[in-house]
Length: 507
Ligand SMILES: Nc1ncnc2c1ncn2[C@@H]1O[C@H](COP(=O)(O)OP(=O)(O)OP(=O)(O)O)[C@@H](O)[C@H]1O
Ligand SMILES: [Mg+2]
Image (cartoon, helix red, strand yellow):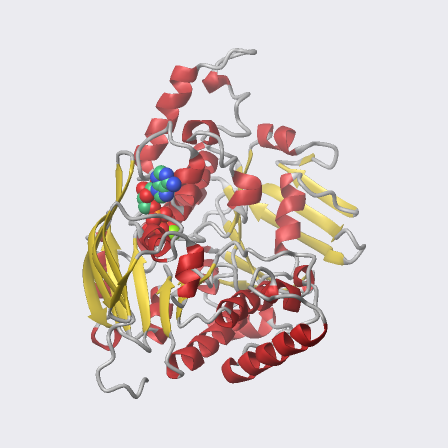
């Protein structure tokens, strides 16, 4: 906390308003952020959180309203202006140059940031001081692309601090982190706060809000609807404020009724580009009418396993059978024809073409389906009608199939992928991180759809790094560690048991 007797708020937003064509993303937003606090921002997908942060960081201009920093009205025309006013942003898709070192990345683009002789030594000294002060360990000479995501994020934070940031904005920083990395990040944020920095944190994880923030503000449909001291609220109240109704924070499901085997994986081994075994002699079955969850810390081979089943990564040995048929020689499209649907972990790289319009993405990979016309002729009318149905059913906002996919908020992009794959009515659904970046209301909805898919007699294979999600959806849980399945448990297994197995400690 600052020693200043009555410090002005770090940030005051007065009447901030922003429209994108017909979409009113921010409506007359008033918000005060105390200096030296961690302030959470929550809200449904598309509520306007990222837009508001981008206005503070100078990436967008507000149509109306005023921003005051430390009591002084300022105009933030671009991110350069934000930086010179002490505002830093940690981007979700890191803006680092991957084949440069940490030191080069941090100094890059700073005035006088030459990396020669005395300047380099001075920069290194300054960075070492920042690392020590804030617990931001990372090897300054490492090449960025060799670092795990958590460490890359620390580089982003270092970069902002090196540029003199007193206010730090983080937009869903834990979405890509392992639980251990997230804990590490929170420790860093606490130290930053205790040394007087102000932190703005967007997250969909209400548990994180309760664990780390001092205050929390809730956005809904472009408006700022409430601000609470964190100590005086609950997860239930926040969920209700966000969504405008009670949210079931636990899924309810009946007993599984497993039928015939629809997916069979036999002695599967998958290597990465360097020949390292990412999936190591893995065997398991998934039956009709059951959800098999794969628990594990990110990076233990789950992604490679899903990609091999989907047909986008070639295994080096072993067999995969979909509904009894070996698929080694079939590409992803042919596997879809056999009844496979795939919700990929990374929607930006594999699930969507961002420059396409929404309705085009809503049939991506399925354009040869009978429903959308025959031969070379696509029935555009049918496709748009189909897209509109999914938009309504999955509450995709804004409800406009002609909008460019890049202009949907992160969580709504995820819903576009989920709707396309589940509504396909597959025999076998394989799912990676289905609720990454989606709000609590949408999580409830997506979980229910996955269970309905099971109850309709389909086989579901689920990969998630959210242990809660695995435990509440799965009928059987396989734990993956270092490329191997190290054990199988029922959904009754405790968090601790699974956690130890995920860490490779117990089988
Ligand atoms: N560049 C843009 N052009 C058109 N519309 C946009 C643009 N950026 C955002 N929008 C729209 O503004 C609204 C608010 O989006 P924003 O990204 O701020 O939501 P969010 O609260 O961050 O949601 P999420 O939790 O899904 O990330 C959405 O309806 C979105 O489609
Ligand atoms: Mg967002």
